[in-house]
Image 1 (cartoon, rainbow, N blue to C red):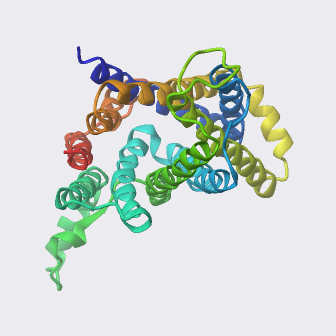
Image 2 (image 1 turned 135 degrees about the vertical axis):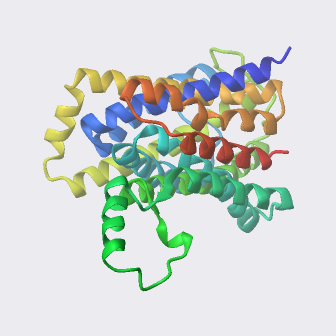
Length: 346
């Protein structure tokens, strides 16, 4: 009873652990070496998974359009999205970085409407506003620090203010602008990449149908007797990860002439490598697998709502591990943002 809900909660915890591992690794080795190593590990695990579930170590039955859409999804979701997410972790940490990932829900709703003609319910629009409001509550604060307030009091004694300032003019970002930019782009790319992946999976289903294969069938030669509906998402992830590895490796070579030294330093940093392994296992391997399993035992809406708890779950461990000061405003903002995501699935 409630097995799907329990698994979905485990997924949220798993992705929380992934974010914490990734923050440590990104700060030690940099985002590009981290993503090259992480994609290599992911592909290794996915090759083994496909061999066990499909009988071959590559995406069986995938045709040209399937590869095209999933490769584009890999560029958006992995190369751009994950690069920006890891960069965001460097500047604002995993706790705030995960908060911005709630932007993926409104982005997916909007791009799904534009590309797939999916209907946007009024509650989804409300969810967008609430999600953005929650993020704003967490990252915006008064521009008056204690020292600035003292100075302004002294200035006020000398001469009265000559102009009137609105309440909005006193608001400013409480986080580095660069970190906010990277994290916001990461959240947007995750939502956009999800819709592109959905289009790719639709082509995958069409390719299997053309080959006379149904989702309930077990592929010939598979070690594990699992239906294709379970293994196809892993095959799609492998295509996206292939583009991710190629893209990250290209960016590493373009942006860093000393890319060999950077990679060598990364793989010889034992603590960083253990963190990358943890981020890989709990993220694209266990996290994705468990998320697919959760949807088999409960509705997708309930599962997605529970997955979205990561920005709230990460607050306590991030504060404890990284000695971060957490304000009531940030906690309330994270909760409000998650509530906004929940509105998409009611």
